[in-house]
Amino acid sequence: MAKHRHYPAESFVSQFCLDNNLRWLDHSNESVNFTYHCNANDHLSLVDHFVCSSHLVDDTDKMHIFVDGRKTADYFDISVLIKMLSSSSYVKPDRVYSTKLRWDRADLSQYQDVCSSMLAQIHLPIEALLCSCNCCTIHNSDLENYYNSIADCLLSVSSLCVPEVRVGVQKHWWTPELEDLKHECMEQPTFGV
Image (cartoon, rainbow, N blue to C red; front, top):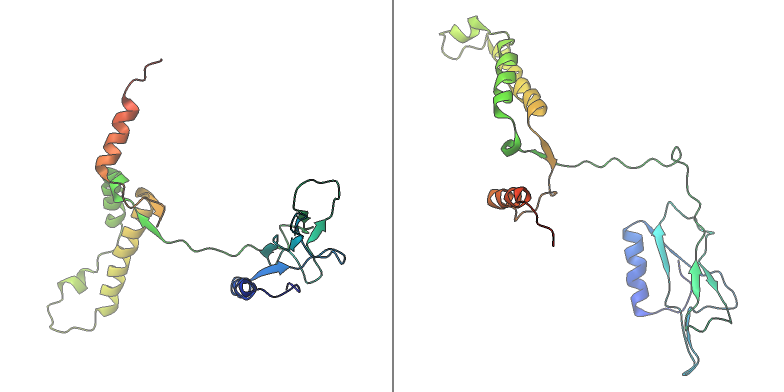
């Protein structure tokens, strides 16, 4: 963590880094502990900082301040050497995205054909369906399997025939009328100037 003078905002930055698994690098220059200098009013300040993911750097990594007396600007440049990990040593965390089916873009005739074909292949538990006993528990597993087969079939067909989009990708204000206007504009001939 930074070892320079404490400012009120420093504790907020430190807490932010801690909460988000970030590393705030300290500067390495022993002779210079500022990045901004104004010779007119003799003001020095460490205004440039470097924050990055903690898996990119370790405790020994430091931010370097380049002191260049030839520069006419009021600031010094900073840099950090980051050792990139090979793709085999860093495993990117799996992100789970919520998706939803876009029935408005589905080919419903294809869905109906595939659905009819797959539903026709499900074994009908005729004895269980024709049972006339009240509160019969003998056929529970047959009816449960039949129900699950229908549900699995509908899920499989929808994954084949209905486009899926990640939740949050669509603009909440986009409407079917705007979609029609967009296509209408695209079909209009363009005229050169």
